[in-house]
Length: 346
Image (cartoon, rainbow, N blue to C red; front, side):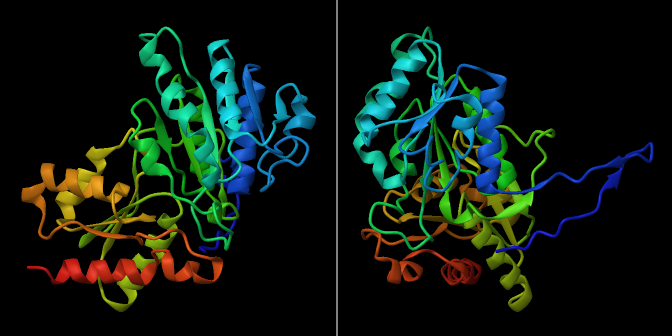
């Protein structure tokens, strides 16, 4: 994990001190985003299993019930389908629901409500009924959890037209992408990388980050483009440092931030510059998001490629027990193996 060193205050043109933004964990940044959204709009409601009294399993919603009351932040029964069904009904009545599904694997019982109703109402009503519902889901692995607590569900939602899919990788992005998601008229699946919950960085809540549908280059490079998102952005950056130090390879790390809408223009710009691509994600290889990216890059940028698009992914097996997790998850070695293979291709 990269250590964030707090910097002293900077100065503007009038020599007046400009305070450095406060350093926050991703948990604190999401909590602040929820607080600010609720303060700005009384229609915003936060609810889910244990979000009020306990403050959530990861304490992401801590203090919201005390601040805004239990009519705006409240606990629900252990019934994910009911949680999303309530959100759909509330949105139809003019509210802005922000429900939480406690863990990624628990989203399965809500699948019918999300796919059959949440994703369809705006189209079904020809745009007359908005669906401003943001479903927060702590997602992905890397924390040594038990079964159903470390899933990569993004491809289910990406295959469902009508849903936006957002995956932050930093505390600052977590704050701003959640604010943008809550303000959206469309339903959003907001996947929070659990193993990045305790990452820290300065978060400026007064200076907006790039909006939904905008990817960013986290590290520029010349030899290979690494396209990833969420928890593996930090892994890719670590791999890029190792590649530069030990192999003299220059990796460009591209953080997608939102998977739908996808910023393919930024992907294409990077690929045209490097000519080689590795896509990295935690989920299984078969029909993972990397397969879609590889296909589209190959279709639209074929003459810009110097080698086939490679994928560094999880395996086509159920998520393993905690003691085997590190062997299952794609890490620096698996990524650098792909980088070496693509550089060796003529």
